[in-house]
Amino acid sequence: MSKRNRRKHFDNKKVNKQNITMEQKTANSEAQGTDSQTENLSENDAQNVSPDAQTDSQTQSSDNVSEEKSDNMTEESTSEGENSAPKEENFEEKYNELNDRYLRLMAEFDNYRKRTLKEKMELTKNGGEDVLKGILPVVDNMERAMKSMETATDTEAVKEGINLIYKKFQEFLTGKGLKEIEAQGLELDTDKHEAVTKFPAPSEDLKGKIIDVIEKGYTLNDKVIRYAKVVIGE
Image (cartoon, rainbow, N blue to C red; front, side, top):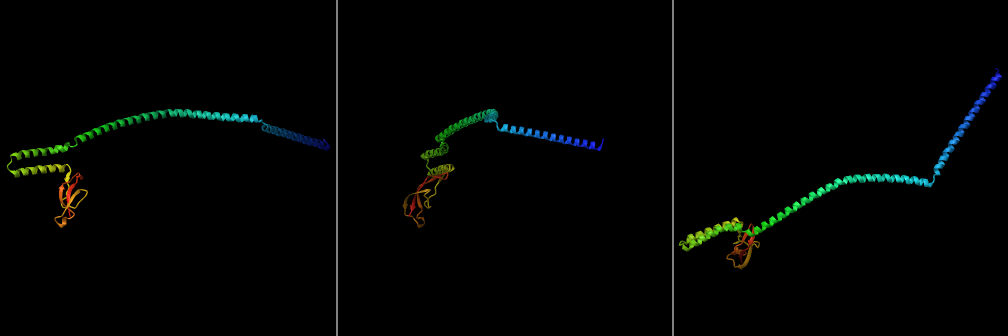
């Protein structure tokens, strides 16, 4: 082949390559244009969706949410109902226990009230029993002394017997908590003494003091049961 023919053949191949390249570019650009048009149409379709379709979609989604909430509430109420059953049983058992305890306490209190009332009545009725039992021996001794005085010729013996009876009686009273209030020669104490009258004092040191006791006073367990009636010197 001559050089001229070779060159011509080379130019033809170069032109063919350029044509093929141009055709490929054209096809690619057309394909890209078609894809962009398709995307634009899809966007326009999405934007041009009717309000009714949007409303239906929202309504369906809200219905689904409502159904889920309803199912959750049903499950919760079922679980609460199952849990409330044992609670109610516990409350009933607790109520029965407290009611039984209350009835027992009321019965015990009623028995206690009746028992204490009976004891008070017996104490009021027989409260002086111990005192009377202690006085009876003194009464017996007094009766013996009175019988002996009818036939006694020794007055000193009678006096001694009476003194013994008196001392025994005083010991009995002291044992019961009874004490005599001291008054003779002391200053007036209004908590223990009751001034009946005034009389000229026999000496200067007795002025304003008790010079005589008309009636003795007594305390029972440190409580004044009778004030001493006294005369005050002036």
